Length: 248
View 1 (cartoon, rainbow, N blue to C red):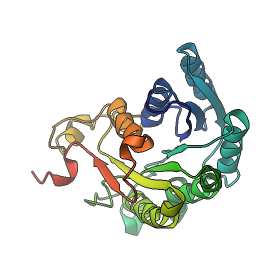
View 2 (view 1 turned 90 degrees about the horizontal axis):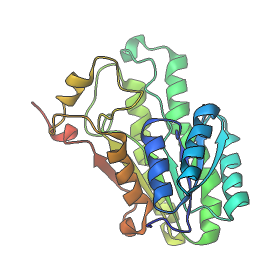
View 3 (view 1 turned 30 degrees about the horizontal axis):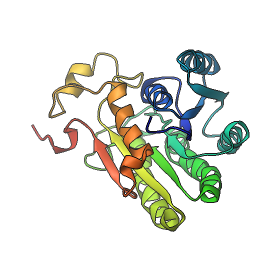
View 4 (view 1 turned 90 degrees about the vertical axis):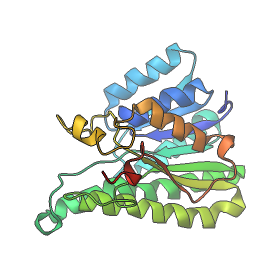
């Protein structure tokens, strides 16, 4: 029970990596605060966790809304009196397209969803963790924009690279308060964001010649959330099946 007596916020919890992490964290003893736009899916997930003996609370909303992150933190504190972990995982690929042809509205939407939301989250989560004298902030970034560039993914790459910069600053600002901040960089993963018909081609980009299951990425998030990573902060932890080192 690596997360016993701890409370974790998980965004993007209705599907994919976020859903897998919610189940994994609850299995390890955490009370989980589930966040996503789809209230019906959140309710199903919360019921599944409770049926297995876990503790779950859900609040639907949009991470682009500056008031949503404070509401999640308030829910965690109201229900459990603490906030130990925040897995700020929600994100979007966006419409894509070459930079010169990209719609500025889509650019801004991708940055709001992937990067500005992380700022909103950290700003609301830090005071609760600072009061406790410890905490783990985790942000889902990507190898795209860090190790490689992919055509048509300018906004996505910029937003995910920005998360790594934010994590580095947070690590320096918060280390003396016992709060760690790390970025998790998954490879191709079997989620709703995986492009239809593209699995074989994407798998071939990885040294392992396959894509990840959500549970595999959730296990990496669990490591960053737990005390097993107690001396790890400011890191960009790649869990990409060797994608970033594969050139052929």
